[in-house]
Image 1 (cartoon, rainbow, N blue to C red):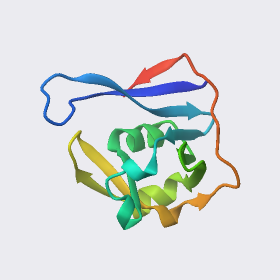
Image 2 (tube, rainbow, N blue to C red):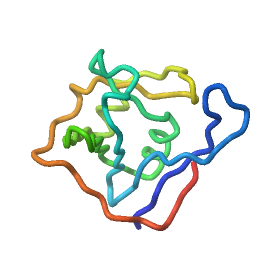
Image 3 (cartoon, helix red, strand yellow):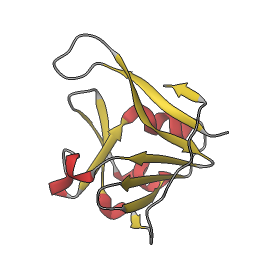
Length: 123
């Protein structure tokens, strides 16, 4: 069943937690959508996501991650094993992040669009 994935995060410089949207779990894939230009290490050809999302993916037998940039209208798809075996953990602002080289992902021929999902899971 398709789900929206959220986590409780304390934003940098704040003391109160807030529920933050991390992505969508659709079929055997987790979809994340964000402007790549706002990614911290985009200039170094790396992307990152909340480490809890990787843990969730491993627990629920997710096979792929798809990262989409709505501004540039591109999508990158990476296998969970490639991300797990070639990424690294780092603390940054809003908690532990999982970093990986975008070279691990292949560019899809068109931007992935995801359906609306109403069911939620908080990790």
